[in-house]
Amino acid sequence: MRPASYPVAMLLLFLACSALGYESAVHQAFTFLAAKQFNRCIENTPMAPLTPLQVRYIARSNVAQSDVNPLVRMFRWNYYDRSEEAERSALWLIDTRFHGQFNERVRRLEGVEDDVAGYKEFGRIVSFLQQVTSPPRVVPVYTGRFWRLSFSDRFDSFPVDEAALNQAVEQDCSFLEAVEENYHAILSATARNTLAAVVEPISGMPVSWQVFWTLADEERGFGEYGSAGNNFGRKVEFRCGDDERCLLLKDDPLYQEFALERHLQAVRATMAAMYLSQRQNTDLAER
Image (tube, rainbow, N blue to C red):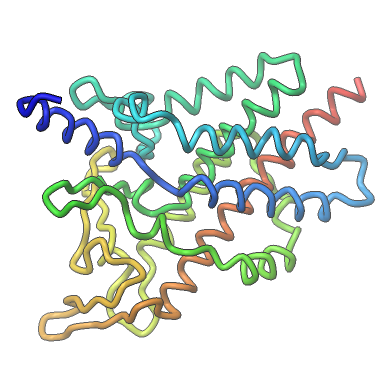
């Protein structure tokens, strides 16, 4: 590579990395746990459970959506539009929002006749539903800050406590009784849940989680990192009043509680989508 091409290569790497969200292993963990609990919840009902093979089609497609190649990722970022209006919000040639992709996947799912293809399209839809449980995706905050050699948000790499998550999931199936009527409604409800969590006060402190991700005044705008910066999960001291500073420790229980709720929401959103999908499949089989 010629020296003159280094800046271009660095820019391309920066743009590609900036669109990252949850790691593929996290998407897979959410999907398998959701399927396991979903099948428990629909026992003794007319609804068909998901088979192990169907779950693997969903999980593989979900992972493929999150692992899209860097060239595509450069021009398609996985950020949510809070106004829910923009299928496409462009920055140069870059599509900054994922709504166009999501809508296309839903249209494809509605048109498929092959079961395997259907579960693959469904897996890609699930990937977006899981993404909107991540605060930087929904606020949204642009995560690529090349001047600090930072290309992702630390929340997205915060460890999933699978034991605690499994225990939390097993405690409740009742939310499936009020599943939204379509995938767009599940997406909106899940994103609203994440935004509500971001503006909630941090327990025992006079500030909300916006010290990490601050919402823009305009719904269609990008937010920014707050006074705590991109430091979720780290020891961080930040302003929380006129003459007061607050402190969170590395792997603080407050971090763990917040992350567990977001991860729980990812599993529940996945279960809601599975319920909607299997309900539709059951209705078609009965006709």
